[in-house]
Amino acid sequence: MTSRSRDYTMSKRLGSREMNGTLRLEENELGVRMNILEHFPREEVKKVMKDAGNGIQITIFDETRNETKKTRMKRASKEEIFHIEWDIEGKGYVVGDQIAMYWDTTNKRLCYQIFPNSPLRNDPSKSLATSSSSSSFRR
Image (tube, rainbow, N blue to C red; front, side):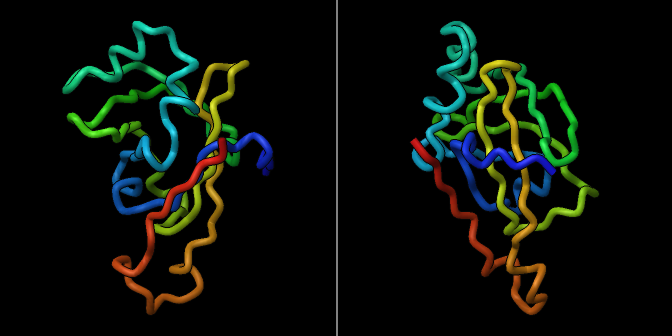
């Protein structure tokens, strides 16, 4: 497992939305514009910011599994929330696990690593409703 914690600029706990195929990134908690969009040409950023648009194609890289995938990133309606389509089904992650991310400027991709530290792993009596979906980022 590769550990590049010095490079991580965004982190959050996985919620049910992430388990269902959409990585949800909130601007006010993760600084999506500063940490991801600033690395794209202005025309590409306009495509992401357009309401109900198709967004842009990006590459995501799972550092733990050494897997690269092309996917789409778009803004959710008029909110400052961005969605990235992904598939983590069947990979053993659960709600509450921590995801750490950074933009790799050399390879032009969003790199992430998921740390299986959900409270649900250690205490099955906890419900999904009590697990948090907290986010943070480093500037």
